[in-house]
Length: 384
Ligand SMILES: *[C@@H]1O[C@H](CO)[C@@H](O)[C@H](O)[C@H]1NC(C)=O
Image (tube, rainbow, N blue to C red; front, side):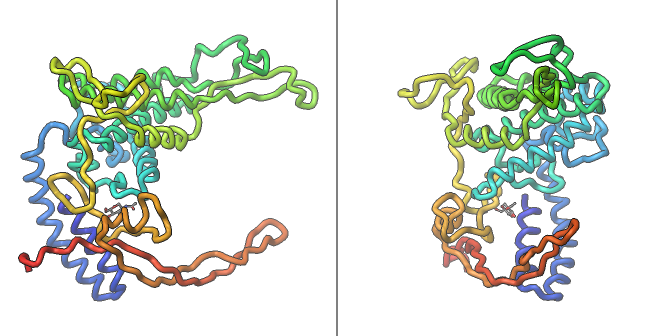
């Protein structure tokens, strides 16, 4: 955390000054910083509570997935890893995709789903709180595993699964009869494996947090299933579609991301029952079911300031939009601290012409735009 905070601050300074000496200074500092970082990380590792590291870290390991080297796997997960190393590869690739999706969904937010480099916790201490953000990350990560495994099954990359064998013979939809054909994505296998693997850690403890995570994990898995779609191919005289073969296919992961993002906005605050077997909705006027909703237990910090103990990186230096009224507006993003404005030249492609055949030729155009970035928090006078 400290490490990333520093790297970021130096990075911005380098860009701002834009000079060579800036870069050299940055290098020298980073050597020293990395030693401090190392010691700091060691200390952190010694004093961190259980929720800290996670299978999420598989994404950062790339091709080096060796089950004993992945920190934060519980026994059950380690066993699954040893039994199915090829599935771990898919989970790792999948992790990159759902983390990217998370960052896309929150790019205009104070909390932007940023990850910490070379850090087993992946998201840092933010996830220690049972907040709305944690609810989202658990849901999308478990959705990501379903998606990655299901896709890998269909592509024949895994020994243990393939296309959905249940989809045989005839069936019908609103357009009439069709034959199952091609390769239907085996979502049920994806869901089953994700449940075994992802939920394993939460099943080891019985507390409010585990209960919340299990609920949100399930929400994530179901979100992927919700967007399965029927794809068909027409046969018959000149595509008359007298005969159709169809298969069930995953939609783009963006659909799942958008859906879970909406669920984040309407997430429901709950309190856990005394005996730790269930939860009740905090708002007593709430009617309906929490079954398909994300739930959270603790309120979120405002993410305005850099707060290491809460894992908040703060919004100093973040870009904001002066004309927006949403969460990326300068007022909201900068938490009322104000912003700096910088004129920058941007090179864009322009006056593109289509050239026969087949190329597009563009010119480089320079234009000047104003970039607004949030001011840092003012230190109180008595500290100076
Ligand atoms: C997310 O926010 C942090 C600081 O709050 C910043 O360092 C990082 O560049 C941001 N990431 C993106 C993708 O905007």
